[in-house]
Image 1 (tube, rainbow, N blue to C red):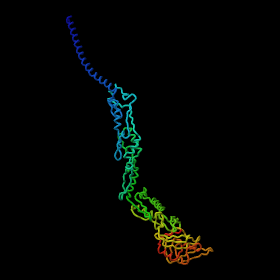
Image 2: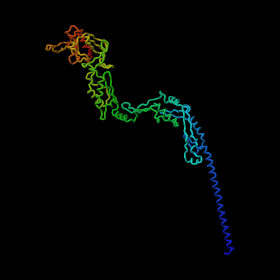
Image 3: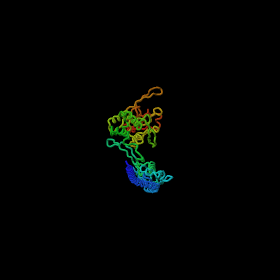
Image 4: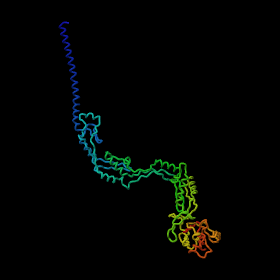
Length: 488
């Protein structure tokens, strides 16, 4: 290659290199302009945001359950004022509801207290973009105040606290419907427990609640027995096996009634428990027996005395075994019936005070040797008598019944004399009325010419009560078997 050609080649290379550099420079200039166009606005937004959020809350800022994003701190006070004026609590009651306006009725005031370094404390404005993706819960606190005396007054004035409108709860129970029993559900009532209502209100005010369900807050008195109570349902199953049963027991002047609930009490796991029935009948015996028991009696002189001894032959004496059998058979057959118990001895009547003597009876005073007879409360006979010889054949005291009656009969007996001899007697009487089974009775005494006074002290009877013919005849004809005879 000639010198001239080499120079020409060198010039062409340099020209090519210059052209290449020019294209690269041309490409670099648009890229820089684009980058600057993007970054400058972002930087501006960022710096503007940093300036804005130095005095305003960052995104996702909350306080007391409210969103204060992008807001100034002063708005918190405004929100507290708004809450103060609008704050109310609705009480959801069993029967209705009541609304309480706290500010109006309790002088309620709600306020916010900022941290020492202000509401923006802990939030660097330079990091504001990150709060688009995270929460910022402000660190201040809420304070509330209200008049507690007014709260007490308000509670007492609530419609739900009106005593006239309160209804106590009732337990679920078994109730007879015709001839069967059914479970009657419990009634929750609406009786509020004041202390619990007050506690629920205090908690609701402090926790910023808008509604309090008084049932859920356990403010009501509750029934003790619910319809699904195991004991109630178990008893119900037993009742179904018996359905309705009513046994009415005529105790003469008084009535004892056993219905299904009582009858069920005589059952055990195997069925009817006869021992339980016996316990019940023995209770009846203790309550109603008067035989050989003391009771009060108003005598012919008008004062009350106590009569009744172990010698009695009048009164009520229950036969426990036969009465138990009678009740057992009724329960076994599940029958409803009115029955009389089985008496070994039965009085004429039974008064409210427990006395069984009534208004028709014969009364004898041994110390006065006097007999009175009453029919329906009226005195129909008053006569002198001679009773058993004093300290030898004393007439027994007590309440007796006329057990048997005979006319024109002979009274026979014997006694051992002091000299050892046996003296027998055979006395004819026109009217004989036995008082016991040992030979003591009422009768006329044809062998006597006088009655009353002190005759009985040395020349009395062998224990009987002697009287004149007409008196004995009147008693015999007008006072039947079973008439009570009170001797005192």
